[in-house]
Length: 102
Image 1 (cartoon, rainbow, N blue to C red):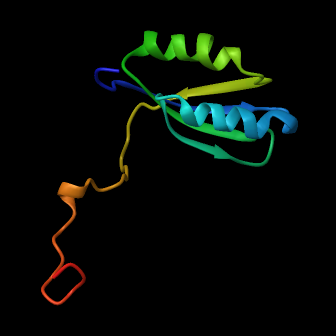
Image 2 (cartoon, rainbow, N blue to C red):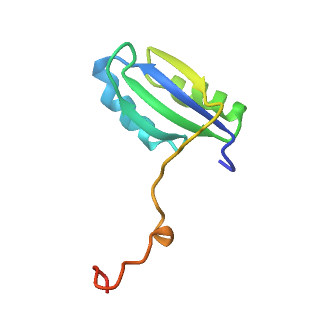
């Protein structure tokens, strides 16, 4: 994936017997940034990051479509107001004098 220009939230309904396997499989795909088990009418949520709308379409129809998902509702992300992520090692502040590592 070159650059991310398309994001979507995917709410999925998966039979309980397949939930762990589908979630674990999605977690190995490069497109999902997050895979979360939930409760209610949908029991699996994924945030996917794709290079463009055609890439999202391919993901939905080929990779996700090959899994035992009963139903999926996709919602493209139009605007992100706040996002969080892990700090890379280079971005972490150096320990202060007297703290671990000094």
